[in-house]
Image 1 (cartoon, rainbow, N blue to C red):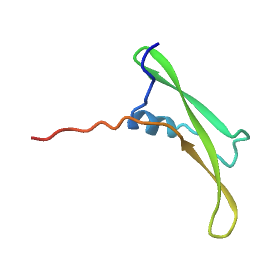
Image 2: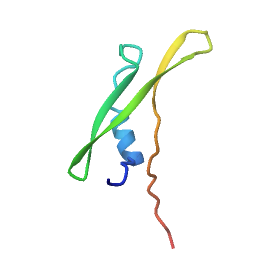
Image 3: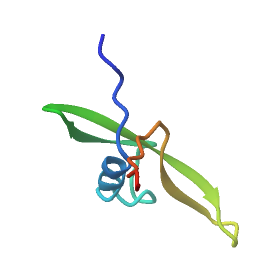
Image 4: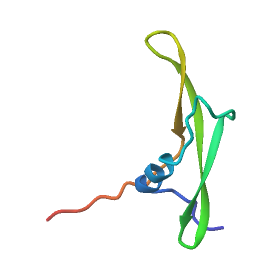
Length: 75
């Protein structure tokens, strides 16, 4: 069995730009396929409900997983 897929911050960010409007999406989750080294992996986002300042129910998409953060070493 290979190593588990951990998406990069860039992959999650790009996938999140393709999410539908959560208030209009009927399901509690949304899956977006992401290309990863000639293989397609799925990123799953969950719809999260909360109340705003006016106590109205609103929704956001949440990615619940680990991400890889690429850093540069400056010498």
